[in-house]
Structures are given as C-alpha cells and as structure tokens.
Image (cartoon, rainbow, N blue to C red; front, side, top):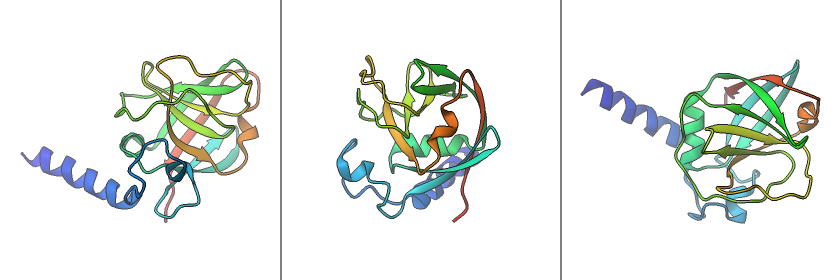
Length: 157
C-alpha cells in the first residue's frame, strides 16, 4: 500500500512540474509549441557538449521524465537520427509519421528514444513516432558518424 501511495505522489509531482495540456489534442500545433509555458526542460550531454530541450506536456513525456537521469548509447539510423533503448516502455500517445530537425520522439516497438538531427525527406514507417519534445539549440552535436553517449537529466527550474 505504501508503494502505491509513493507512486501516486511521484506521478502527481511530475504532473505538477509539467503543467496541464491546454490543447488537449496530442500532436496539435499548440502542443508542439516549445515556447508555451509549463514545459519541462531537460539537459543533454553529448560528446562534451551541453544542450537543453523542451518536452511536450503529455503522458508519454511524463513517463520519460520518470526515467531520468539516463545515460544512453545512441546509434545512428539513416544519417538522420540517433536512437537509444529505454529501460522500459512508455505510455503511448498520438503517433506521427513526420518529424522536424531537433524533434525528440518515442518509438514504442523498441522501446527507443530518437533525436532527429537531419531531415532526409522520408516519412517514419508504421507505427510512427510519438513526439515528446524538441532540442532548443545545438542539435548538430548529434550529426557525427556512428554512436554517441548521451546523458539526459531533468533541468532545475
């Protein structure tokens, strides 16, 4: 019973830190707008470079935040994205088959997280990705051959 109460408390704190989704529509333009207040910031360390990203307010993002801190070895795919395995699956949201440079996506079959550093004009195959955030600046740190080690942490307010 104590464990259930602790999990409920942790989820409430994560939810409060992220704020409420005013749009209520996963994948909407409002949800993808990283300038909207109440967004959760994360820090990424990539090959000695420090980056920040802004996460979308969604259940999938809150599940991702609950995994932090993480250190991942992210492999390259199609010279457009780096992807790395998560320790467990996240809640599923509304999938999309498109992406923009800097997008952070969750690929549920992996379960993997992916960061898109280049757009090759191709669509993401089924089941698509669930967008969870966007790199604020410096995404070119991922545009290197081969694998990179990435540390992800929640940023302090």
